[in-house]
Image (tube, rainbow, N blue to C red; front, top):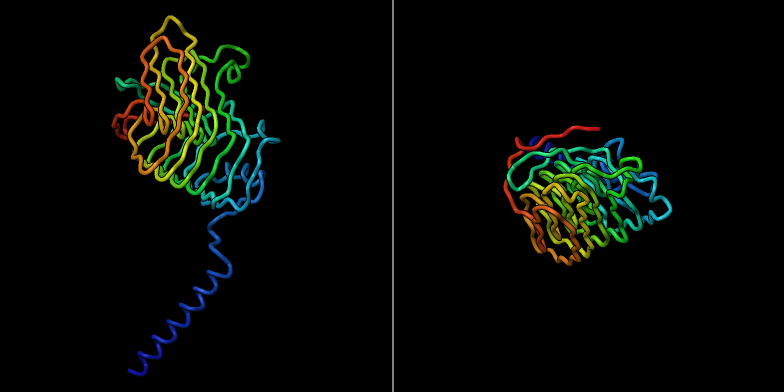
Length: 266
């Protein structure tokens, strides 16, 4: 019994030492974000865990931000990102319309897409997503299908919680399927919890001949995700010549399986 008691005592000592070490030095697996350059470096390791340590005003860097696909954890830690603009993206995802017809769509937001990701405790202010007006297509008409949102254009199996989003998201295109969401454009099998949004959403269809599929929602434009205890305010503007699916929280709520969607890159 004495030998067993001695072993237990040794194990307790090691446990206390390990706990003290962890508290003193923190979790080394979490990468701290202390500057705009740190934010940019996230694209080099998009599946890692990050924590925002300071407020960052991105106004002076708005033309330097390029959204990227993210599959890690981003803890805003109560801090804010402010004053940035997104005008293009290289992330193409296969999306669906209300008839389950597939389209290849440009996806854009703070992140281009989220997959198996978690974004929490983040405040986003004075953000502008502006896709169209020839910006993405070198001066010509923007003619691609696209989904946009302040946080991401596409999200799958991802969680967004305790976040605040203030900004404007615009899309102008002759593409045949497009959507605009206050947080996410195209979403599936995830959740939005305890979030606040105050967003202006604009959809403009520039093709008067083709009857497109257009989606707009205060949380997400199209898909299947839980919305829990969120406060949503939306000013929505739509000029369209096709089939319109707009809602205060969701434009079109429809279940789909992962097998329905895929990913390609430009």
